[in-house]
Image (cartoon, rainbow over all chains, first blue to last red; front, side, top):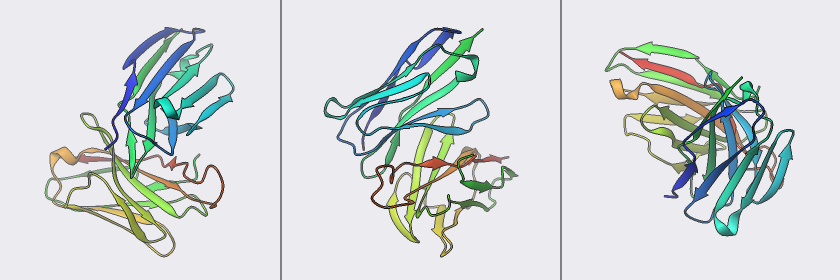
Length: 106
Length: 117
């Protein structure tokens, strides 16, 4: 199967700081999504981004499919951004990374 | 709210028992996916159905089975439960309108938390 690695595994930020989360994958994919799992366990769609760049408010994402990585940028972080961020890719099935656990402190 | 519903929200049962988890996809979505999230294994893909037919299989145990009904809702059956089956089980759906760039975008339900005692 496709290996999906996310870094860093853990991140602690002061409110207002910016961060970049990375997702590397081991094979060609035709689907990549970023999710936020909030402290209540809910998985929230952030981006569907098999290639290119998208922005949504303080969040943006870039996928370079030919180089097999994707980046999620969080700017001016808020405490509500805390949780775990997952990327998921699709080969013959969907594969999730192990996530980046983000804690934003006031 | 993603539009995907799952019942029940919580389930507590004993080892050796059998349970059924239910999922209703977003209106118009034809694909349903089941995932297991446990502390030590992360999010694992179990199985996908598309319009009633099995489409892809992941790390699903033989004690587990699923089906998708003509109204497109899906059920995941877990039998001979073991302590290690305790996990959060998610259902996701996709595939509402063919030809759209977001056709393969998955939307997740709130999950069913299963505790096996």
